[in-house]
Image 1 (tube, rainbow, N blue to C red):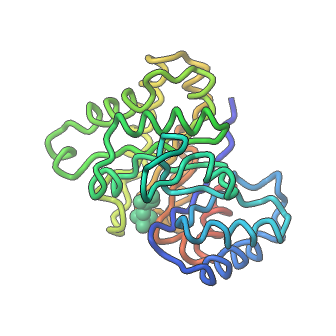
Image 2: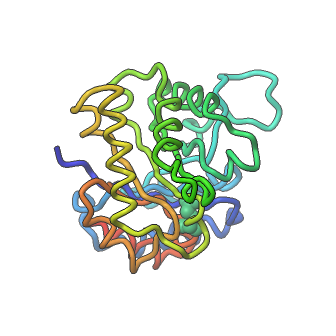
Amino acid sequence: MARRPVIAGNWKMHNLQADAIALTNGLMAELKAEDKAALPEVVIAPTFTALYAANKALTDCGCGKVKLAAQNCYFETKGAFTGECSVEMLKDAGCEYIIIGHSERREYFGETDEMVNKKAKAILANGLIPIICCGESLEQREAGVTDYHIASQITKALIGLTAEEVAKSIIAYEPIWAIGTGKTCDSIEANRVIAMIRNTVKGLYDANTADAIRILYGGSVKPETIKEQMAQSDIDGALVGGASLKADSFAQIVKGAM
Ligand code: 13P
């Protein structure tokens, strides 16, 4: 089965509303000449405070080439959870995807596999798509436990999801040592880990589900690295941090995935 590539930009904690509008409009200008059907699924993930501005810029453009994601959510529907946003609220703000389990959220904000699983369930129950992140630290890689750790993160993230839900979901493999360091994981190795993740999904579900789920690579993806990454058998796209903060570099990565 041909899987449609996904290029997602995680803006992290960057961009005021005016910056978000400028970047969104800049990206759309860069993609203006491209045929929508030939583009990968293009997703941007601004901070909560810039979602409205980015969504308005996307809606005003009306080209439908770029979709909106949030960088986090809470799994409860409503209530006394100061500082949190429900999936329904993010859907209301225009989001179609939500990133969960990013290593920065796991490391600095105590996000556990159990929370990732609850968030995945809440996102899918609202008809949105989770982008489930996983990845090993340098210590884990050097200790030879990369595959064990990643398979465990994914197995726990998917507990209780149906095959249909998993087939719609997106996984992002982001080795922690490659994030924001400029040290991209070797494409052959990234593909090996991603194929291992796909095989894990096959073991938990079936071959069709494993064949359908999109699995992205993230960690210092740049315009110069994307073609080689996309040429691999199992890499279905990229989750981009730093290089998504400039319209031209992100657009080059998008075009590199066509
Ligand atoms: P960089 O592309 O800046 O390494 O960030 C990757 C990432 O964490 C995306 O979620």
